[in-house]
Length: 490
Image (cartoon, rainbow, N blue to C red):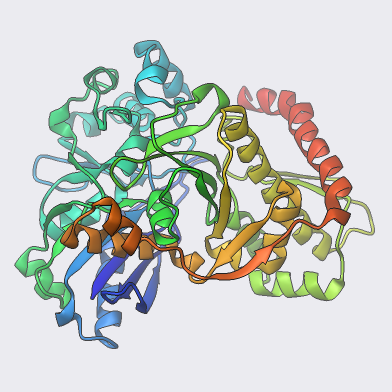
């Protein structure tokens, strides 16, 4: 039995799988995000641990956890967990969708003009390095006490094992790692006044990182088992759905949206706002485009409308609406690909007195699909085309949304069983590999794609509608960009 832990933005998922990779059970503990100021997004790492303990207790009520053999970790990337010399958390974690450090990105580029060549990525507010520059500038007393910087899932590892360890896929999202060499870069660290001594040890995601401390194991009600390196949420999600070979890809509809394609080398293309990271498996890399609001845009609308997401989607189906003149830009948290614009804002355009709630719901599904199309176009401009695409993430449960994306991209998409649990399943698979070896044959044996539940072929009747509307979607951002620039200075 193996345990996969996925620290998501909205909840921590714990999943048990057997030695054959079959899911035995899973539970989720909710988490909340605080936004004390505009563009800020933070969580208390202590809440993650409370959620982990509760999740293990829930699993223990249904399963004999004495049979547990190893644990794998996954989690949202780019967060900054700062520890002092005693290992205590100094401040709330600044999350991936926090946009406060746009000015620090410019500072970082000035200090490290070779950042693109070394990291293979643009300096964006979501990444970890600019966050540390912000802390240095605005909270110097906190920065001075910072002995260790950990990524979110690696803080859970620290609480489990007492070891400060990270792995390549998550570390690549800090801007301190050189993904080509799979090692920290001293020049990039120096640009943020940090050193290797403040960084966790690096391993591959399929390697062993440590063992659960006996007292912690007793608290959790589990044996003192090994903990695998694991992976950032997207890389772990890829492992969970068998996206492990060059040319394979997926689209994730989680809190954020991701267009992810595996490669056999580090193909950086920062000029196209494409992320180029290490995979969670050795000898592999990946490129991806990211939209910061995907399923979270629909959740936001549900909260505003006083409905559940399920109610909104059911209302849309009953309305029989298939097209809407309303455009939605889903930039609730700014945007990464293709704009790298922390100040981009969401907006509706084209509403009339005849616009209904169902029209607005459909416009959100379409707007996220258009943002995914922008990600696909960015990767295509960088010379990367996915040979096959799988849909994963909680939002992918909606057959309507899956079909819209297939129509917008004008290519077939597969939805696989358990796709919404990809990162947790991938973390469990990495735990299996850490115990049994990560040779190519073993990777292929463990990381098999789940069965296809539905295949979505693009509907030729919708080509002209979506082609024209995608062009208007892109034009709307360009036309309103001057207004966003004025807002920045007010």
